[in-house]
Amino acid sequence: ETGVTQSPTHLIKTRGQQVTLRCSSQSGHNTVSWYQQALGQGPQFIFQYYREEENGRGNFPPRFSGLQFPNYSSELNVNALELDDSALYLCASRTDEGRNSPLHFGNGTRLTVT
Amino acid sequence: AQSVTQPDIHITVSEGASLELRCNYSYGATPYLFWYVQSPGQGLQLLLKYFSGDTLVQGIKGFEAEFKRSQSSFNLRKPSVHWSDAAEYFCAVGPYGGSQGNLIFGKGTKLSVKP
Image 1: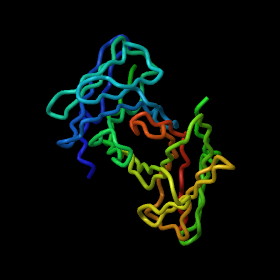
Image 2: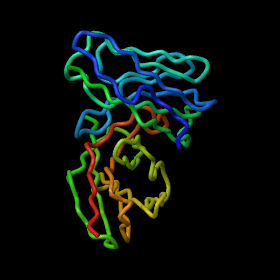
Image 3: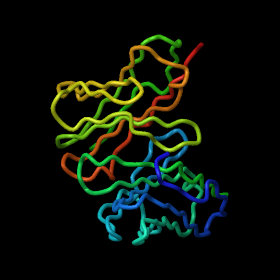
Image 4: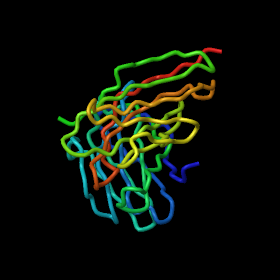
């Protein structure tokens, strides 16, 4: 049990639609990162939030956006869904920016775009 | 370019046999190195990490990994594999002194265990 909960577990959307994925972290986990894991691939870093501000972004277009809330929950929003957005989306959080603070991953949301 | 290569897509070992999973990285600065394990339908669990110091790192579940700077490798080992070790294993690299959040992962090695 990592203390990181993601919802929903599975989701089916149509191309062009918008989707919001949610993550609930443990109290005190001020840093949250989102990853996209396509089938047969390793996770790819989307972006990271620290105390409600984005402080790092991977090679993903602006239609991928996020929010982090004071209650240690966060959201990943994807607009104008494309077929290639079908993947497992992982949320990970940790307590601070220190190097010894491990990342705790949730079990992910499986998004299918048809 | 920063990257992580796991040369073996799928490995099958017999229960009780030893295991070594390979990982090579390309990184422009001093790296932080990690091994994660992912069971079907689950998220990633950290097995071990290397930041500095002793190049042989002990992790959970009896795993260890050795950092070899000259070979840009961070191979994962276990002396005796258990059936419950069947899963997918990911090597990852992150920036030294910076956030662990933006890790670069390899494509993973799927481990199957024969009875």
